[in-house]
Length: 541
Image (cartoon, rainbow, N blue to C red; front, side, top):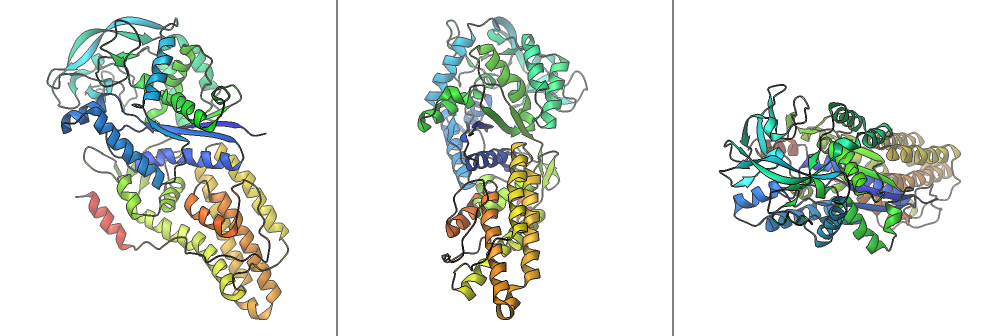
């Protein structure tokens, strides 16, 4: 029976370029989408650019441009980056899109009618120098608990959840001037009253990543706090309530609703029932980085519960750890980063995907090293996989005029491949992408040994039937590897699927003898090792 799958990839802030940390966290979403489509499931894979809020407004002020112009610029850049890397979104939109804004206002209008929303006057951080009310994360100071530097929403050092007014010596993160606090009336959502529902959700999160379970339980144990739904900012979605005409919806209370608005847009395009997508029989994955965990395990569920329309709550949380760069923390402010827009211009998209899926921060922090990247590409993609495909198919072209030799299926090889479909699919569904990919490359290495042991370059003249059998079995391996690897390496797999006329179906494939191969190309080019020093040098400029 085909399943109904929603996959939500985190929405990157449209106030700066994407870096490798974003890609490492988001790539698993595309693997899930491609895999479930190959299984015949109905997939809706959505994301978009997060365009509202203080970060974009501050960037716009610095550059003398409008927030709309800034966010549109980066949105377009994101779209190009994701397209070049093969992200197969069914809908990639932006929070400044009119459909999203209309949906959010509709959702919030109903939300305000519920018992879990109330009004409250509260102090708001204001920077007199910048002449702006500040989002919590744009107030920095000293944590009252551990006495270390902290943001106004949370201390990264000790993990304490904070309010800006709790900080000692609070200053504006933009200009470093002291902030003042002004009283302002806002709408709040009573997350504290949903502890039972959120605790139950966390307890059912057997398929959540460990960091998601740990973080969520910690937030609950420390005491859930109510959150403001509205904000004194000009750049955002207007609040659909009388008396709030000069306020906007707080960014955290509208960007996570992008999963709902984007899925509605995708459902319209697909001619699919939106209610089925958010019904009890659907399965929802949320894919993001460690810093976004509370937004997907506390904030989003709280909004869905409080709205009262029976929205489907998150099933699987696929939350990555952090990615560092050459042993140091990535810093966008210091320009210490590898920008995706530059990376995709110089390197093969499958090569980029392979590295971050095989070496990414899936269960623990991971470090990107240019040396390891080049070695990974040359040793695994080119030296193992590309070499196996090339040596087999060029041999057939050279000695069999491109016609796949006739032979019977090898039972042992067939059983190995069939087992790979089950094992790889199970790992992908559990969010264990690194083991899934490594398992496939173990089989690639086995296939190379099989080719070497059978030595077709010798049997071609001494035992033609044995040579034909070897080449036939290798073609079966290549065909099935192309399908098995397609969620991870879509570009090279698409080439092989074209050569062998394969359908994108998650099942054992058999290529018949006698079929003529078209001209084949080398799948991967070698990367010169000189690249390492050149790329590392760029980081220090």
